[in-house]
Length: 102
Image 1 (cartoon, rainbow, N blue to C red):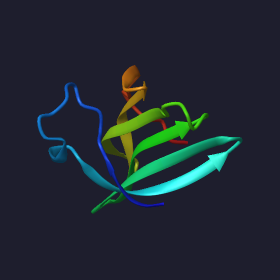
Image 2 (image 1 turned 135 degrees about the horizontal axis):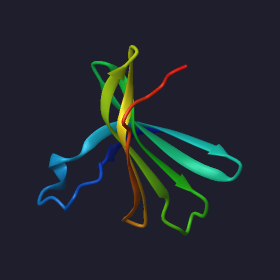
Image 3 (image 1 turned 120 degrees about the vertical axis):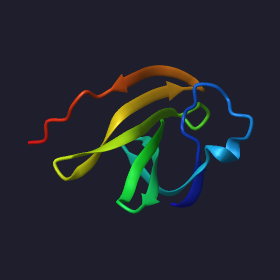
């Protein structure tokens, strides 16, 4: 837990990483042998989950899931962009068209 810097994915490496740095509160969890870190950005709307790292093997790079483009949906803020990457390479990029909350 505690505070950690978080760097959202960029189309290209910025000249100054401090410009894209986000200070986040981190929650560490483990379930079924998978250790994960959840990165929450504090803001006026509360805390937004901006990223998640999941590690199966401590000697390997984690799978990273990035959440962004939050918009209000039925009174809740939900991400409309989700990017999955591993070892610094993008795996997939999801752009949500709509959410159906039930």
